Length: 107
Image 1 (tube, one colour):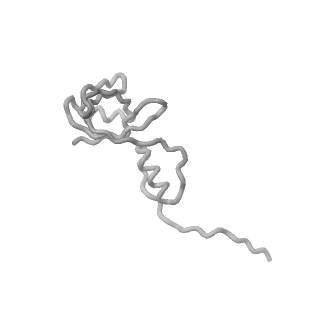
Image 2 (cartoon, rainbow, N blue to C red):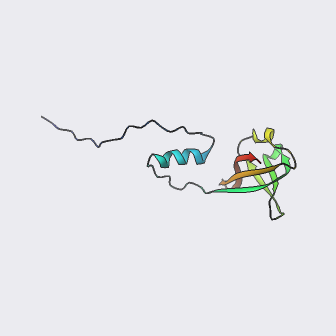
Image 3 (cartoon, rainbow, N blue to C red):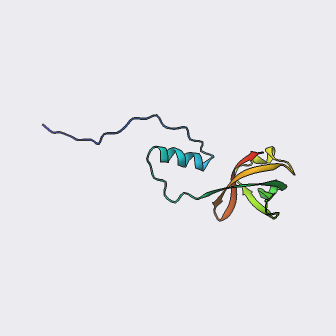
């Protein structure tokens, strides 16, 4: 007679993960006790849309320090949601060496 011991596991339904939002995926993994190694930091900034360049996949945002910074756009649908002069809150992540908007909220 052979006895096989298996580690006990807690059955839990998987958390909803929005594949387009890395912070959602990381939060779901962390909530399940899975370490997320090397996950890039996410920075939240507020500013005003200064210009939109859909051809270059970028948006210029005037930050509170009164300087304008160009950000890459991860999801092209953002272009449909923003207009010049609108105040926004963005989440920015360094992706392939470029500061990239991964989430945008209109204020």
